[in-house]
Length: 437
Image (tube, rainbow, N blue to C red; front, side):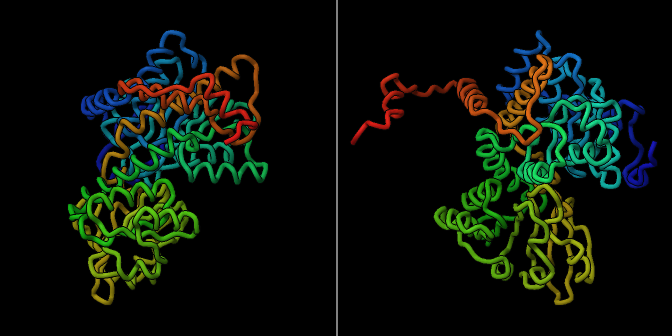
């Protein structure tokens, strides 16, 4: 058992070797209440849980997951377990684990290795989740899949049936791995479903990022020059929410079409060098490293707030900020003040980690309902295909549109909403290339 460096700072851990390692098992009751609340807001996933709890299609399958340990993730884990899976878990970010939820899952028999602040033991936790080899992997950011592919090649090539990936960053890395012929089992691109990126990424990231900033700072958003670095699905959601709260929104981009979209949505577009001089609050959402660097910090206004809502903390070059700072202190939880030699103060939130999970609770349960329904169904496809003797091609696989539509339709039904259907004549009309004007 590793000697955890965090123990000196955070107290003792609750652990059962080979079963779990969490911060404090006594937090389980608190965690169960959080999970119960999330279940009340995730009707699609609860429908799938009930539907497959009798047939147990995952019986005989072990699923290893590496995903933020939140109350919503716990609903997914409970659903997989109810459908027959043996589940093990680790967090996909050092500052995104809810310790009460982790304790509740451990007490419910989930092999879980996760706690808030596990920086030095992050990969140790991932490796413990695959001590018993998994048939299926469920990932957020590709750290689990990468660990299996790099350190357990025989497992990746000869045992794992397939996996899923939740994020844009993870999908990019998987496609690079596939291009280099270094992908050894099929992975469904859950992130690329419409019911994931247009809701989880846009509305989930938008709301939860603002939530994290306010919890960490309590600042007024209205009237601030609010800079969003990157106008993809996540960045556009953040910009919309900030604009709705009265901020003067500024977007920076490297992609011309994304910059045009930002302009037409009412945001000012400029380079990062220009934005650094005028911004009050900066949020990175690119998936690329070093988008805020030394010269940006040096040109920022006194009191500028900087944070990240991309998967990794590399978007903000924190070592360069540390290099130019003459002093540093913690002002409040998840808010560190850096004083520069020119006397200006830069406030870095959540150590540059995901602001919405490190300083808040992550995405609302309602949007994670659709993302995690897609996760459940993708794993169901992998298990059922394997059980029937089939094999998916070893590549990054798009989720079928039929699944996307099923999730969206089921969500609407659970919200007591109905939509129209095309008539046979309308279907014939739109497919008739001879139909004139």
